[in-house]
Image 1: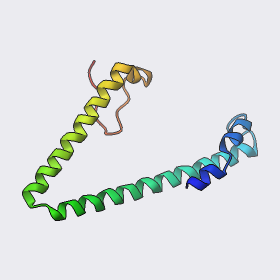
Image 2 (image 1 turned 45 degrees about the vertical axis):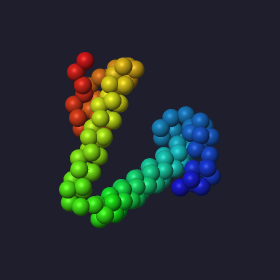
Image 3 (image 1 turned 90 degrees about the horizontal axis):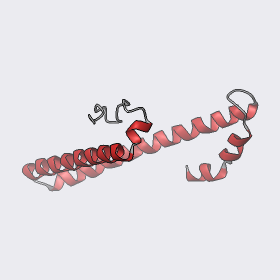
Image 4 (image 1 turned 90 degrees about the vertical axis):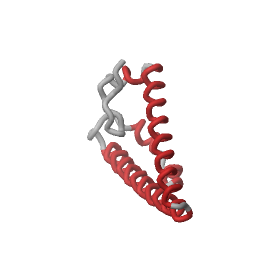
Length: 113
């Protein structure tokens, strides 16, 4: 994927394109962007597989009680980071830039300000 991104002059193609559907260059840009989106999707799928494989490997070495404690701690960390980033976004005004009522990627409702 890195070779594709470095090898394709997307910026040059996109800067030469006036608008959507106005030229064949626009179609080339659309096709290239679709290809990159698919490549990124595949990277995310592979990352998810690696995360699950790693988690299963860790849990194999733990006792059942240790595994539960590990999973609870991991979830607490995840929730704490999510809460912190939401507060940071609000403090920086990012929430307002996005319209303020956009749901987060986790599906949580926006924080009350």
